[in-house]
Image 1: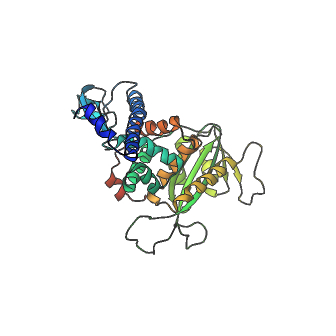
Image 2: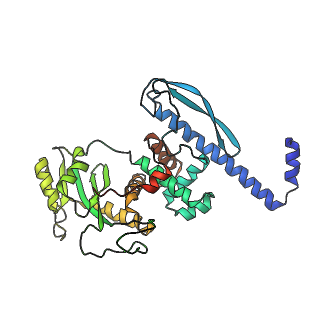
Image 3: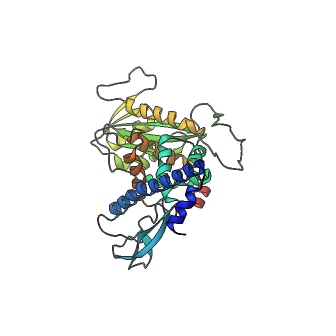
Length: 347
C-alpha cells in the first residue's frame, strides 16, 4: 500500500482512533530516539580498550557482520563480533540484562518505574508488559549491578549490622511453618536464625558495602571473609558494642571506637556510627513497601537501594541512562530459570 493510500485510510478514522494512532507513533519514535544513545554508550564504554571476548576474555576479536533488532516500527542493524580463539560470536549486550530481550525499547521506561519505586503490577499497566516478565527483568538488572564495587575504604569507617526476617516469599510449599502474611514477625525473641544479618560498612566518602552475610548473629570469621579485604591498618573502625567487631579490630590492628546501644555516648569527637545508622533507617523504610522480601533476593534489593541512594532517588535522563549502562558493564549469566530455582545461601 502506497503512503498516499495509508494517509487516506487514516483520514477515514474517527477522532478517537486518530488520537490513539498519533499516541502510538509518538511513543514509538520517542522510545527509539531515547534508547539508541544508551546502546551506543554501552558499546563505547565496553570497547574503550579494544574488543574483548565475553566468553573467554581473549582480545583476539574481529567484527563479524551485523544482526537485526526490531524496535517497534524500526528495524536496526547492530554489530556482531567473533573471537578467533574460542570461535564464538557475541554482541554488545551478550551476558547483560538486555541479552535476548524482545522489547529493548521498553527498558528505559522500566528503569524509570524502578527509580520511582512503582510496584510490578503498576509498572505492568504502564508498560503493557506482564508483571512476571518485569519481575525477571528487575532481578537480571540487579544481579548485574552487584558487580559494582570498590577496592578499599578511606579513613574513618562506620560498620554496623541490621536484621531482616528470613523469608521464603513466593515459594509454593513451605516446610516447618505456615506462610506469613505481609512480612509477618519472628516467633523467637532477640536475634536468632529466623533473621538474616545484613552488614553495612560506610566511610566518610560514602563508599558503601551492603550485603547479606549470614543468618543470626555475625561472627568474627565471617566478618573477615566479607569485608576484610577492604580494610587496612590506616582505617579507624567505628562500631556498636558487639564483641565480634571488637575481636576483629584487635586482630586486624585497627584503631577502634565502640558505641553501646544504650545511647548514653553517641559521639567521641569525630567518631560515631550515626551515618551508618541513618543508612539503616532509610533502607528499612524503603524496603517496607515490598511487604517482605524473599531472602534469596535480598542482596538484589540491597544493591537497588544503594544505587538509589547514590543518585539521591532522582529520576531524570542521566540517572535512567546510568542504571542501564552500568548494568551492562558487569557481565551476568542469570536466566529466568536460574533466578527462579536459586536458593538462599546460609553461609
